[in-house]
Length: 376
RNA sequence: GGGGAGAUACCAAAGCGGCCAACUGGGGCAGACUGUAAAUCUGCUGGCUGAUGCCUUCGUAGGUUCGAAUCCUGCUCUCCCCA
Image (cartoon, rainbow, N blue to C red; front, side, top):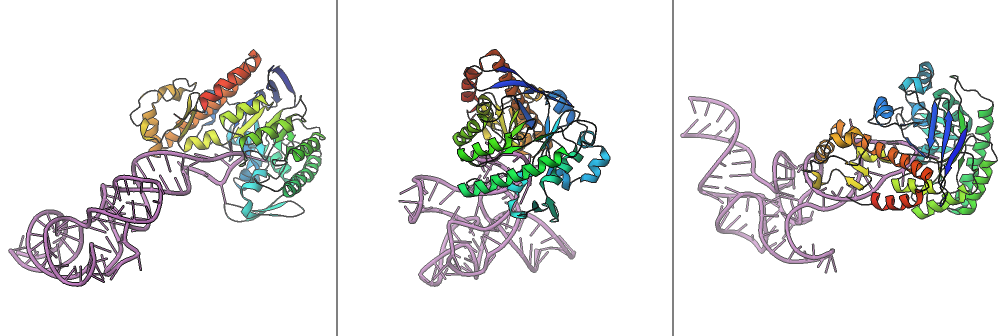
């Protein structure tokens, strides 16, 4: 993968760049909407592409492997064709499910045994077969199997967890190198830094994963409950070690403020369920602040959803109408709210790229954070 | 006209002598949500109070009882069956 830094902020570590994949070019910093099960929930692929301008989306190894399963994905010719998404896709390895489904998993020397959350059946994930599964899915960027260390964790536990991630990385990398993409387009394999909230471990981990000549590097195990300033500190520690000329992907983060703080620390790629999940739960992010659409105060506010918004739903529907839809649990409410939130996240990154190029990123960021933190 | 059943908080509906300011569901109000087991989850929902607590409530008016949403009597209303 070719990654080119095309602009740098002068007063922070923020940079803007271009990332080439077989399915198109991505400008960074970029937010990648999460589409766990082969769908960004509540958003049509055409809306994703045409209305939102999303350039790359996520899928999830664990979910797609369980359903529809590899047989179907293989017959479909990969996830791109299956879901009719022509842009780049990144798949998470299932490492996060090792963490979030911890009560139905068991570690073995080989890998991690899971009980399916769907039917309870047993499945084994190994650093190797997770590469194979992601070959079958056919994502442009695939992730190493890691363990997202729980927070809080003792230093000794965090170290053990990190070391397992490193051992898995060695095996996963070897397997990745001796296997081939299945659908005629390139795939890139990203290792993941762990180390919990311990700077010494983060340094060890970042140094370790940099010893692999990967196309890009991910920072995992953050925004799992630790204070935000600790997360920022870890990003600083890791980014001081990760190579300048490779994309950096902060996994699972985060709030709009988190994104801006991480961009200013040199992060290039983000994904998070927050804009989509919170949308379905009635929470809207706007450049003037956060709105809980279920709140009584919107019931007769017929003004546009978001007068500053860039998505057509922002000017075509009122706050009162969306509140009605959300409260009535109407499907359209989830659709409108999700379109809005994703368009806000994508706008925020687009604007960040522009400000980095302009050389005004830091002052813009400062002002932006004040605005978007308001509770409306 | 005769017989029967019932009236409980915003709605529905438990409770049938003290553990009841009253189960539960809905509705309402608010909060949470960060590589999605989430169109989910949590809290509150008579009044005053930070809490303990106090005050006013179970159609209505009386009565029995140390004590009543719960037992008795009258009244009002609703529903069902027969004529």
